[in-house]
Image (cartoon, protein in one colour):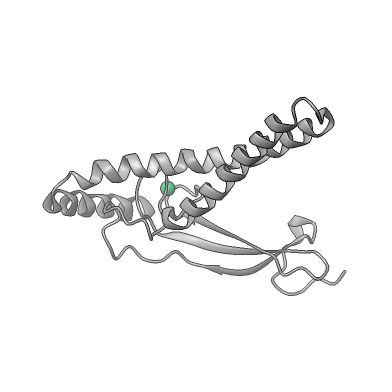
Length: 167
Ligand SMILES: [Zn+2]
């Protein structure tokens, strides 16, 4: 296996760093909820992020794995507008798998374990997404009752603290 420039030897050659950009600057108020922007669940803010794309090293595979890590705490950030449909799909599949397990309960016992395993897998991911979406929705609701001036003031304070911390 040949190692190309920019590949990551620490990952045993299985991971290649394709791109790595510095986080975008804080131009907009990070405390105003916007479901189209990436949000950090730990900082509870639309912080800037480091965007990394890793390429999985598999034959004939162009799969890439993206990660947005918060520039402040390095937690993985998520985009509520993008996560919501994925969450519904995962929870939907979980429900269908559970219904299948229930339907097959008596006559096809052999398949029940498989259905339950399927449901557990998709359910785990679906509920994790649900958990993050709930954190986002609670925060967004709390922010929306605040006045524009209040958000502006808190946003400015937040940015000042943020800049100080990065020095
Ligand atoms: Zn953060």
